[in-house]
Image 1 (spheres, protein in one colour):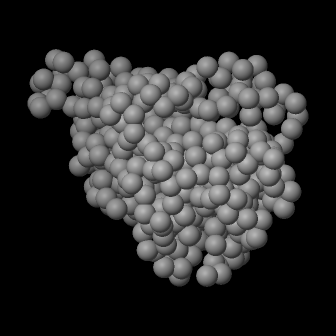
Image 2 (cartoon, protein in one colour; image 1 turned 120 degrees about the horizontal axis):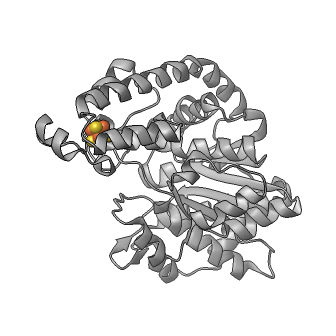
Length: 376
Ligand code: SF4
């Protein structure tokens, strides 16, 4: 989807310098506006909400907050394409699911987008299953997602009512309209997009629990799927009555060179299964907002906003706001130099990885026991 120089491509790369402008261009509302109402309902915002990492929403107030007020059930749904290893970008989505499950009591649906992985990346069935179990579902469980309160499913296993929804959706949009949203589209990507529409909407069907209020937390590059889904909901009126979903948008954590964090860029991406020494080496080579020399940094201070190590603190490694502020001020004031700061980050990261990885084997067994292998 293009607009004032931005193009959102769910299958491509995206580097955003100005999230506020992007939000305005695509008509996404600021998330900060709904935080007071969330508090009034008795819920403290999550770390990502209060730090502005969750920067935008569509209909969070109308669907989610109103649902809580009325005592109605709310579901949260997101998808993972099993195309590589689970990294700290994925963890950002996982943390949100866990927040909604534990703190707000929402039902969680996790789509394993194996149909999309095959259509778009040619990932074969066996590999998609292995990645889903060993990487995605296992890491989600080890991070704290309760498998008893979560419905994990493969797209290819989901059943007739789900596929009927994708079929109905395909009759309500033209190729030209889809290209206006996504840009050039292959038939495989068209199918993948329509399958995503079914993912987002199917929890509303009685066959899947009848959750009329659905929230979809995503990285902002996934917004085209939400735009398409919202249009299709309106056009399905009279055929099947559905509610427009709510969505929230998070900033994308950068890779350690300042580019995209992605499984296909392993040197710049920290995986939750990285051995400690590998993770330490990656951190020590990371791009920072430091100055050319120590003397200059003491004099001028560093630039945390430009630093990928600070990103890790902000998104993941320092939950305590006052501790984070301390690092920010010491960096800005030139008291903290990058070498020492990276050592602190490496220690925190290794401590997290050790604890997390100690839970992984058991989580993999659970994942194997609950996930049916895809059927085609
Ligand atoms: S001192 Fe830390 S936060 Fe500041 S630029 Fe260096 S590594 Fe980044």
